[in-house]
Length: 423
Image (cartoon, helix red, strand yellow):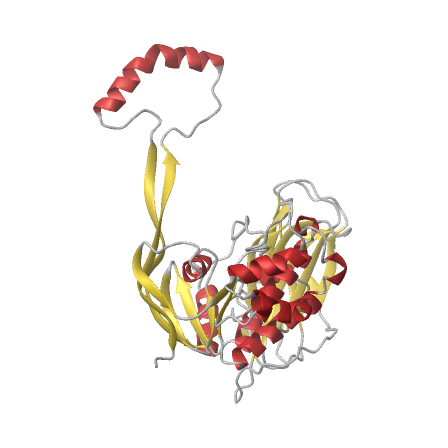
């Protein structure tokens, strides 16, 4: 009997994107009169060319292209890649939420998916009712759901709200209950998207522990996350997606290193992921326009040895008048990618006007960090904690290595660090 539970062959998913040929600006009354006089001529001319007036141009967009891979029973596979790489689309195809445009995927076993908060839940039903509903959707007999019911509720920590309609739940309560149902009803294949980012740090740790437990019992886990620490902790294998195609498939550490190298080669400016609320936030009154990380020799790098100096050169631009501009730089680590230490400083007590540009240099001297990776967090705002720009886990992480060692997966140390600053 084959151990292969998922097989993708030339898998592709195409979407049709529409673009209005007339961009649809606001029209004044005089424009309406003028257009009415010309309308018949333009309509006749457009139809003569075979295209109606104000037609929508259509563009093909391939979210997935020519994907081929096999996943065996009991494997824990991390799907990683930049935003828009096709990760969520792939999970939707594997979950049978959407059909592929080309190729095919073969799945053996019962699949439980957690792709969005409340997937498979009915907002008008209570938490208790949704446990039975979601279990039935996953193909579980009622007796099995009843047997696991108390364990699910205890894991989700929603006992007090069990008979409350889930539409009244917070997003955190929603995802706790949804994950508890998906993970406890013993699917052969568990598919989890970045949805775990909704929960707090302690819940994320608990979820990772549960997925690890699921994998140890011989079931298959497919996990999408931007938290490379969690990916490395849980997964043994990684698939890197780039523009819908698989560009690396191998041991998870090698996959993460390839992904980090891909990020290092990309540029950062004030527009990088500016509309992505997960990784860049703030009201835009000021923006980072460049972020560079240098060693003591002035060379840009993300790889350091314990005890080396780490220098951040941060350029910024003011887009409206701001007061009490402040800066923060933090290092994150651990399974939940929590902040372990940060530097915070007021840059200017005087108002800074629109179009003002500046540079901040922060140096961490002789930093004593364990050999592992540390995600980067940059914050620009006011001294009263109003955020102008938050750059969170966009850049490649800092990697601390000994010349004779490799990256180690350890619990982070929570530390205060010395720093020098100049602006």
